[in-house]
Amino acid sequence: MVIIDAMEEMNDNSTNALLKMLEEPPQGTLFLCVTHSVGRLKPTIRSRCRLVRFEPLSDEDVARVLDDVRPDLSMTDRDALVRIAQGAPGRALRFASIGIAALEAELGELAVAGPQAATARALLLSRSLAAKAATPRYEAFLELAPASIAHAARDRRGPRLARALALWEKATALAASAVALSLEPQSVAFDLAMLVSGLAET
Image (cartoon, rainbow, N blue to C red; front, side, top):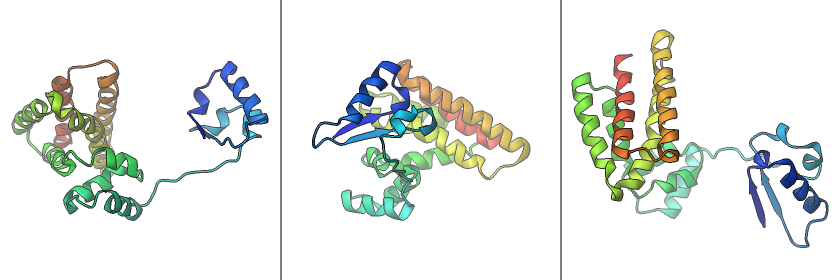
């Protein structure tokens, strides 16, 4: 089995080489060509593939997967993992061993804290995420912080919505660059926490 992810990122040379393989695949070989933009693929590639769409699983299905794979999870952690999974059990399982419910609760507190309390909370949280042993929790925080802002934005209108979206854009950009640019974890975590706390002002 050959998995290619993602097809639209291939250059012309690699696409042409793959096309030859698709025209005459080796016996017993299955190609799974993943793409997030079918329209960007060459017609010659599309014509030689069968389109199979994968939709996110329901929360109930994600919960069943977690129950089967991690029956040791508390209900609080399981429910928190279902919320952050967004239909992808693998995403939930990545965070299954870090006490995700406590991290989610901390973000919830930051979103309603006043400026002075938020700064103190953000400092404590960023320090707890800075240690090397806390890397899995830090990585989860990089995903959870922008997601918590996006979730809050759904219930807002007018200027409050605009403010929440601006916070989300900043948080998303910072989280995306944190690993790629090897930014200092404590500084990133503090800045992200303060962006989440900005929801209390909207």
